[in-house]
Length: 218
Image 1 (cartoon, rainbow, N blue to C red):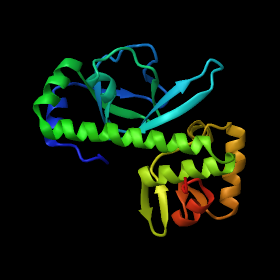
Image 2 (cartoon, rainbow, N blue to C red):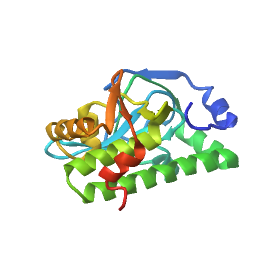
Image 3 (cartoon, rainbow, N blue to C red):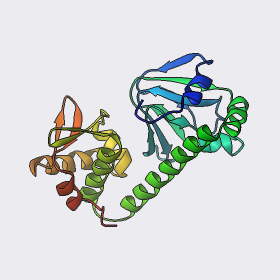
Image 4 (cartoon, one colour):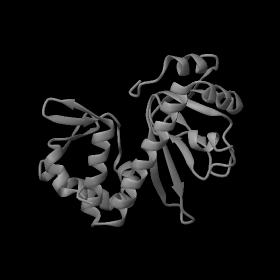
C-alpha cells in the first residue's frame, strides 16, 4: 500500500471479506448513507459531485491505504453528499461503522493516521479550490497534472510518472473544464515537452518547469 497503515488497522479489517469493483462501478451514491467504512487495499477511487446539468467534478482521489468515508462516519453518519466510483479496478474491505468507531477511539495510532488522512484530503481539496478559482484553462490543467504528480507520482529517471491511468475526461473533471478544452491544453503541454505519456500513464518531464506553467504561486 502506498500509505503507511498500522498493523492494528490491517488486522481489524482482516475480519471482513474482500469486495471488488470494476473500473467505473459506483461504490457509494450521493443521498445514500454509507453501508460501512472502507479500507482501500488496491486501486484508486474518486469522490465526485454531479451538477443538475450532469457535469461531474472530481473532488478527491483515494489510493491504497486510505480509509473512507472517514470524516462522514466519525461525524455520526448520515447520507453522503457525493459519489464514490472505482477509477480503476479496486479491492477493498468494508467494516461495520459502529465497530470501526469503537476500534478507532480505543487505538490512538489508528485514530491519528485516519485523522491525518482526513486532514490531507482537506488540504488537497483547498488547493484544488484555489486552482479552480484562478487562471485560464491551460494553467488549470497544468496545475492538476502537477498536484497529481506530487501526490501519485513515482520517480523514473528524470521523469515523474503518475501511477494513475488518467483519461482526458478524468483530468477535465479535476480541472473543472470540458474534455475538449482539456485535450487542447494537454497537447500544448506535450508540444512544450513538459509532459508525456508512458503506457497510458501521464508523466511530468520536469516538475519545476511545469510549476512555472501552473498556478502554484497562489
